[in-house]
Structures are given as structure tokens and as C-alpha cells.
Length: 143
Image (tube, rainbow, N blue to C red; front, side, top):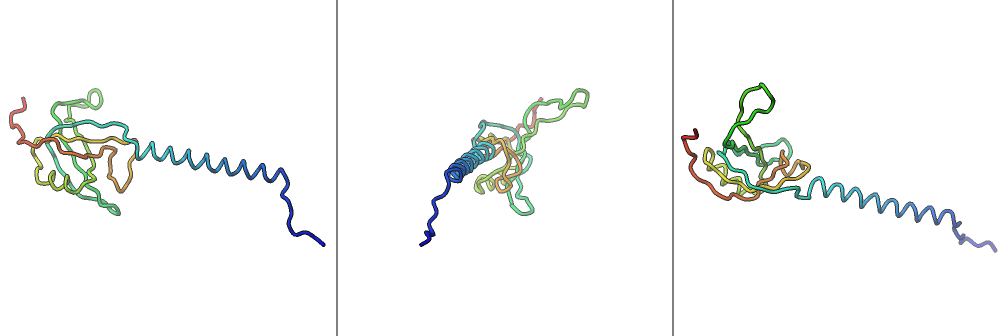
């Protein structure tokens, strides 16, 4: 009688273990890199200035975007003239977007989180506003 059960050779078993460990380590490494790039909060802080706009836009993913014009001036490159400081940000929460869209042109303080990467359903920027700290009328005399 012939036996249909064959014992795998030791070389095949060792290779299979190596392959399983390699796949597990590769999966965990890729998962860690994706987490660090797109979900780990790299920094957070507060920016303030006059709200230029808050809009909902996008071709596939409709996201909330905004721009804050900050006090002060800067020169992006030597000899190019003076420009204003602009802070472009994305908004995840519709309630924050609704509040900002009603207060365009006012002086606003925003709390944001900064990520290393951009996800298309989260917004167009690495900066995600998660809280409005203060809203007040913009001062007309700046200088």
C-alpha cells in the first residue's frame, strides 16, 4: 500500500517559516510607515489672522478649505518684494466650517494639527483645523 501522506522536507518548512515572518514584518513596516505619514500628529499649534475664505471644494472628495491672512510681512525670496503671510488649512468638521464661512473677514484664532502627509478625503493641506479659539472684528488700522 502506498501512503498518500507525505512529510514535507525540512528545507520547504524552513523556507515557509521565513516567508511567513518576512510577510509579517513587511506588513507591519508598511503599516507603521503609513501611520507615521498620514495619521501621526507631527505638530499642533495656534495661528491667528484675518479669515480670507472658507470653501467646500473637490472633484471626488468634497473637503473644506480655508485661508488665513496673518499679520506681518515676509519675503519668500530675496529681491521679490513683500507679500503677506498666508496660512492655508483644511477643516474636517462641518460645524467649524459653518462657523468660519459666516465670519469671513474677521480676526480669528485657530487651533490646528499638522500631519506629514495629505489624505484626499481629509483635505488639500497638511494642516487640519480642529478648533476655533476666538473670533473678533478685524482691526482696520494695522500700521
